[in-house]
Image 1 (cartoon, rainbow, N blue to C red):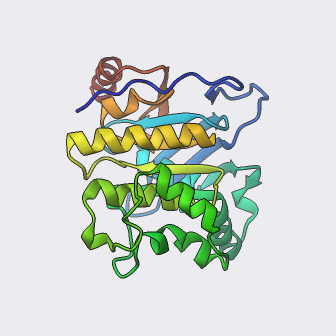
Image 2: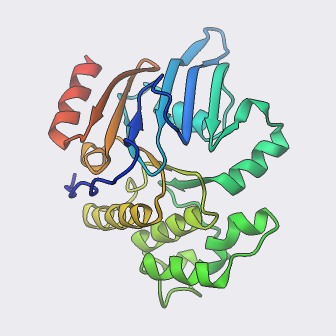
Length: 262
């Protein structure tokens, strides 16, 4: 566990939007259900409504099995809801074919995972450029240099993942997520594989760069200290949004999670 100063307040739209406000949202889920078939069907999401404003930082938390990962996968277009609509960056994902959805994710959605997901045979710059290469585009040299500089990777450009520390590897993954200037970045336990000090440093840098670029972040985490660095915590229980906590604190979120787990 670690503590971070909260991200400075920003002018403009509220960090997270309640359903039905009519304000602009970069991510919008309306009546989203996700049911996994089997001998006993499982409803992983049950009528989720969620609207998030551009530039917001939102933590998603909940007990094990609450639907956190499913929410991330559905909102990011990695999985298809059983019913309901998901709109990201003004695009209704339900209207896209699988090929179009793949192209959309490459250009409009960034991902940061706990395990970094870097290709071991590519150097730092090539890993950062990978989403653009897969989309048939090139990474602008100036933008690459800016990302490398902002994320403290100067001098490491030619190294491969095996030559990096965990914190350095995660900073490469963050740079890669930012490379396409996506509408939103989804981070799944982004500090989970790091020690406390490295996790604190990487998360602080992630939030700082995202703030400077006006980037929207959705962070799935089990760590209340990570959630405390967000502008709002969305708490899930049994596939539903059980609470939304603005300006969360580590102690407050942890206590609320204990209540939900009872």
